[in-house]
Length: 75
Image (tube, rainbow, N blue to C red; front, side, top):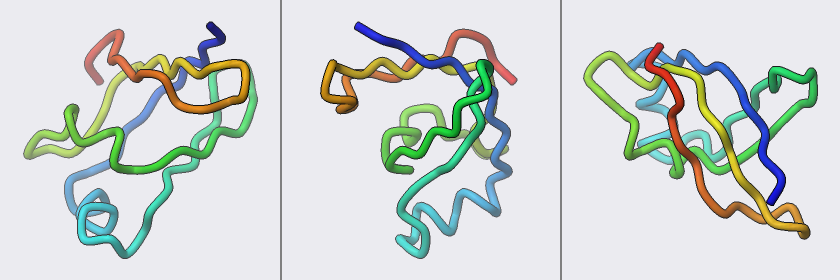
């Protein structure tokens, strides 16, 4: 399945807006230059007191629907 890698660094204070439902999507630029938008909720397993950071790989199916997200390296 296709995968996109991206670096992410969202401080805890910023992520709070996602958590509170004020913002529903995260938009990032992938390492290959593509713009990527996905639901903020998929980041919750990686949330710490410092926020969310690291190198991530998002896997999606042929219809571009989310399959999985994993952190490849901490930020």
